[in-house]
Length: 432
Image (cartoon, rainbow, N blue to C red; front, side):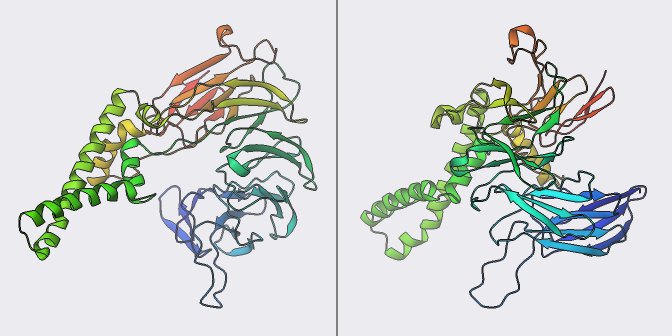
């Protein structure tokens, strides 16, 4: 309808004209909005825009829980800006993170909470049809993934259980009954793609990548671990330096008042030394190809994998293991960090880091090729051309294109086109 919809962190949904950028309307739909949940779902048949929001419970006593910072409710708004219905997730502890509501075409909305709970509502009224998913889930179990509904009427959920162990679980769209589940063994942080793969064209497959998400650049980690979680590294050094200076100044006859006045100077000197050390480690890390974190603290023992399963039974079709990821952050975040900070300080828009998931959500092309972006900056390409259930690199069944940057967004396919938007910006398009 030529309208762009977006939701703000204050919980306001707004509509803008795509042609002019003019604001058409705004409506307050919640008490706030999580910073990583901004996906909207649009139902053309019901003319509704659907968003997750933060909804605080009514304050009744001074001992009430603190205000939420994660989304816990779903709101539907008409294309005229009128709230039609709202739904709050049962249980105050479960969060809606990276909300990605699926509209399978049967008049329903399907979505998942961050702990693996699954919900189905009527789009027109918000009425709850059923709740399914991991029944004994805990609020601390967390994933950044979401649900996907296949053309076979099966819902595919990706979540993590205790210890960060990933689980792919499938449910019947009609009644929410479990169809199958598959132990991914590694942390799972991204949704699946459903389609027909080469080598097994007559049946649908499910493809996903699994493995721990990348973290912060090593320069940021120096300050994150020092000041926030936990602060003992920086403050231990500061305390040791201050204690030695205090003893030296006492021997030199300084009064206690003068010794206290010099403590701020000690703090500044330690801070300067810490910043210079962080810069030195940053540049050393670049010279080592980003592997300084792994060399200093050891890399994870796990090797990320790309897995394809039979969509109906959950039986593994093939699995491809990647090398250990030894870098502190996704490709491009360390290399561009200081340049991005400089750009932001000059008034530019954006963020200093991308901090994506380890894998982008895959896509499957019409010829059965699977594409998915990976944290090392490569777009990975898989084709089990001979259908033997193994991905063999020496037979040309694995390909890649190195962008040098990770991927927040999934790749996109259109007839004869492949489009990729890496973290560093720009849009890369290939035509068949």
